[in-house]
Amino acid sequence: MNNHSQQGNHKKVINFIPNGEFYYKKALGALKRDEVEKAHKFLSRAADLSPEDADILLQYAILEIDMGRFEHARDLLMAAHDSGPEDPDTLFYLSEVHVNLGYLRDSIRYAQRYLKLAPEGLYRDEAMDIIEFSEHELYGLPDDAEGDGRLDYILDRGRRLMESGEFREAVSLLESAIEEHPEFWAAYNNLALAYFYIGDTEQAEALLNQVLKGDNGNLHALCNFAVFHFYKQDAQALERVVSILLKIRPMLVDHRYKLGATLALVGRHAEAFNWLRGLQRTGFEGDPGFYFWLAHAAAMIGEEKVSRDAWAVLVSMDPSKEGKEPWLRARIPDTPENDPKFVIGKLNSGEEGLRLLGLFLTGKSMCREDILTHPEWPDVEKMSTTEKLFLANGLGHRLPGRDRGELLYNRVFEATDLLYSRYEPLGEEDMPILEMWFLMCSRAIEESYAFRNPPAIAASAEYMYRSSLQSGTTKKEIAESYGISVKTLTKYVNELFRFLPFPRS
Picture 1 (cartoon, one colour):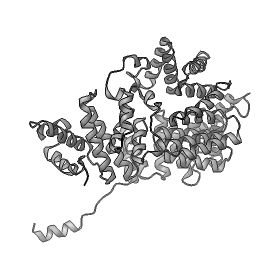
Picture 2: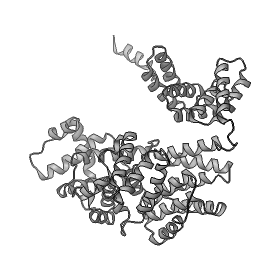
Picture 3: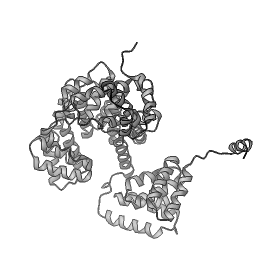
């Protein structure tokens, strides 16, 4: 074939970019072949690409229901329902997911709407069964026994968004809910937490004051104030709120749990233990947070058996907690991140890079509470955006990575963890490479460096540091340990060299 014909054919090439419909069709094909895992993967991708396509969301929700993931299924079904005219199938599955979650009145409401819209529909008998079952379960209960299912959904959705680090989405959801329900105090409380986590403490405290003005003595608002004062190191304000909390004797299980967990967080371990242990003795079966704070409070007052039993339950729910038992504080390794004085010194450095190192070490420390409550803990409100994001990451909050800035920081965090893992457990002799790394990070972030290929970037930092001390260090050795090529390592060494912490001109 001659060059002319090759060029002619080249002009006919059309770039293909898969969309939601493409992955949706692949998912349907996989379901026909009973390839459930593949179908789940394709539907997840389709929903990401077409988040307002009701058919995709419905099919994805059905698969999530089959897998027992009812909360996520409800999110998908609510999004499908909000995306267009009422669809009978969506209404039926909303009924099914709500009955599984225990919102029986909502399940009846959706089933009745399904039957009205499709009286002879495919799921007619199932919808009638749901109504019969739900009405039987509700017989004799007061009308407000369940609360408002829609508002409960908003609170639960907001909580899960915050737990996954999606604070902006949580703010948007809760603000919309408050606009529709001006006295939805629980939403105000959760919105205050969301604002606090993103560093807007002034707005967070204004919301709590609004709650207390409209609902005097609101326990959740008082507990949230205690948490805010604790992290801001305002000892006098914290003591004032705690003195109020210690006088409260709540009857509701939710309130007793909130009070106990808050007291444990701020260091009132004996009082916290009384509330949480009391709940457990009544047969209360809590979430991972309940067992975490019960184990923590018990360990701090010497109730080691209770602490061990609670921690065992926690590990069964969240295996990642194994090895982080609170009673191990007595056997904390003598390493830099576990030395509050050392970490605080970094946090109060005049160099942002060293402050970032201090925030990173705070997240890794087994003495985190001692660091966070240290009198010289820096003012969070005065931290830079980069510092706040490093703090949030160290405390377990993850950025969703939905824009260029969030992707940049996620790559920084990934590269940092890779480099840290090479030197864990830390010794004093390992500090220079981490100091170099964080000073580089600070300068690179300032210049909006993209941090693409985190393994190569971590490898480059290690090579630059080790080669400056050991003449025998080879690129091949470092590249192989990170699973990259020598060519890639060289490329990123050249890119990162300009960020090395030499004195600026």
